[in-house]
Length: 232
Image (cartoon, rainbow, N blue to C red; front, side, top):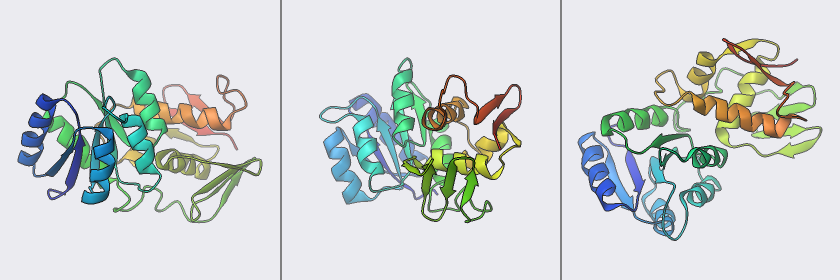
């Protein structure tokens, strides 16, 4: 883990300098891109283990960079947003980011979150290991783990990796209440130190794609004080 290669995509010189020094001290190898176009070029050239991606970038936004990377790679991506930019956080997770941090941040906390995300990367055992590889059918929803495919009423549904893994876990346990802590541990890792709102954002996104009326969910229900349940 200490030799992980990090692509830092950041256009503010003060942040670039601090990140470069701090992350190298934490044992990472750091490459830097200062705009969205350079980020995609560097990604292909460097082949990083993780991308630390600012949302606000010249030439090409961080959201679009994330979207382009997700078309060809499952490498972990952590989005960096302004403290008040909640919409950027939601959109970033929607297009496939694994986590997010807000400015300002502490290097040690950031490094801990990076290591947690790296431990859950596709290069390590997948969070769905132990759930089985057989197709699962619950009502109109069918999930095929091997093909990474979901259909609803026979129509294909495209899901980012974390949403797919979360839905898989919910379907396998349909009818059972899964505590928030269990969901976070299984999907993001037991050492995840990020905002638990990440889980709620992913649940919200799944509801928007599966529920007839996401504001009145009947498939993925909230059990107050406990967690979530997928209806049998």
